Amino acid sequence: METAMSDIKIIMKETYSKLVTFKRKENRESFNKELLKVLPQIYRYVSKRLNSAVANGKLNKGMFNPSDFTDQLFIEVYDNIDDIKSENELHVFLFKKVDELLEDSLVEEEFDHVFFDNIDTYSKPEWDAMEENYTQDGDGDFLLLEELDDSSLDKTNYTLNHVFITDEEKKLADKLDASLDKERIYNHIQLVLDKMNLPMRTVFELFTNEGLTTEEIADIRKTTLDQVEELLASARLLLKNSFEKRFLIDSN
Image 1 (cartoon, rainbow, N blue to C red):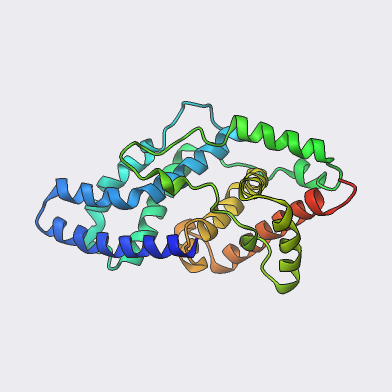
Image 2: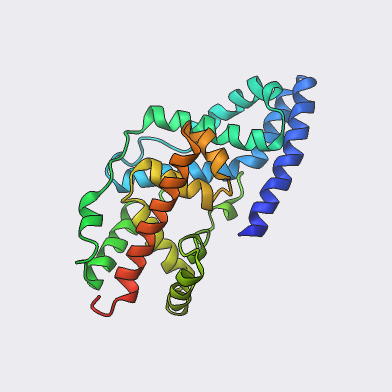
């Protein structure tokens, strides 16, 4: 995961420099081809947002396609590249703009209190049924465009290290890691994320999947750093509790 993030930063730096040059030369065609190199990451993020909305019944299948949102970025970046001063600013700008477009189109999702209020009572078969329903109804409906690199849809992005961060928690993670494969970990995390409200889930995904700092996320989400850190901590706690209740308690 760290290698992937490093690769993204290198590509973003190279792309930013070229975008500035192409804009200066008013070479729109080369500008768009260069921007396309960094869009798989953004397209994946939009896909996850749309998949979650479908899984939660907030969006009908086929109503939107990720390209409905990412295509607008070619215009937004071209018009604003002169005001974007670094590759880090470009990275944040892309997420901020696509987030604005998503917010205008998607209904705000409520916190699924029923799910979390009853997390202690779910049996193993109930957990398995919820996971099966999730993978059938929501996950994987939206894929990258053919010209984009589909490796950016790697389902192993989520790891236990994103949830269990203290030394004591890592002991629990070791127990889970011994019994769960990466696909199972991903499916469980995504299932629980889709039961969270939109701000909490988005903060967690931007921090873990996209490698953005809490300061950058606060900028993207137009909120305070304290709020971002609180949402991130709450998301981790809910995920940690869900893993414990589902996989580490003998009664389940």
